[in-house]
Image (cartoon, rainbow, N blue to C red; front, side, top):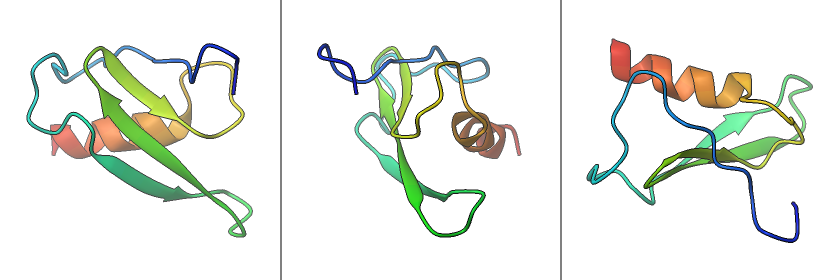
Length: 68
């Protein structure tokens, strides 16, 4: 994590501003199956605890659940 906190990635398919799920944390299992990451909805998008520098597959997977 940077000294300014986790990077927030804007949502593509859901409006997060004012959403009742702000603060909700989802858990995603890493591809190695040994660790897991936390994805949190923030006022302006999503954060993920994985080491990715770009919007990761964990966030995309959560967003896809809203499209179902």
